[in-house]
Length: 280
Image 1 (cartoon, rainbow, N blue to C red):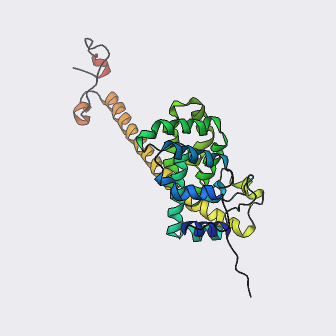
Image 2: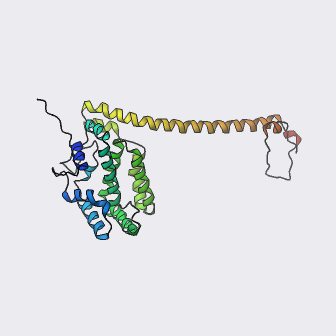
Image 3: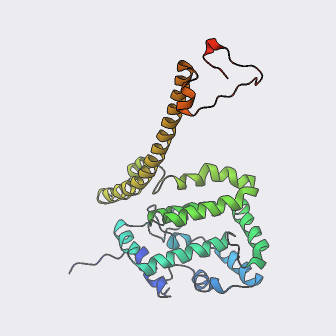
């Protein structure tokens, strides 16, 4: 009898949507926060939430899987293409993934509600990105995961929130431009050739990866083509305008009525002479 292959990330998310953590994929404390974080409404609750998610380093790989094997959690699994497809087709799993994203926004201090805790969230934001620097790596993993699961709008929104919130912190803006901005331009990985050369994927899955990348970049190419067409139209418009001006200079004052063109002069008291073909 053929053994059915178990995809660990898919299995984890299936259990998570049902409120199950029997296999202890993640710390029970973290699982409890996943279940209850929306109900928190006091400083002690938020402080405990921030503390637990900060100190635990083994949940982020499960909540946001991608194609890379984690260097920090040997008990997690890199995402397989077959399970990616089935997970993206499961509405409950995709909804849970988005809810996990919202939970991490709260942890990073990126939320603005409840408004009475806004000062607390600002302090948490600074703590996450200025003191506990490993959170920058967590952001990268989350962004990569969102791109892989075709949650491009959510990824762009996350980048936008970080950028706007971090504008008053010079240290973060420099890091953002050097590290985060790439996720707004590239989708699955920063260097695909290097990715494949490291044999992180077997030959069977390389085709899948390239198809995903090609599919996503087709949209970017269409957008680039639209932008290029706009630029070409602008250049054509400027060229036509310059042509009219040159034509006016060559043919003299009669062309003004045809072109509806009224020239201006630096010295308004000085009239152009006849040899220039201009008469007031």
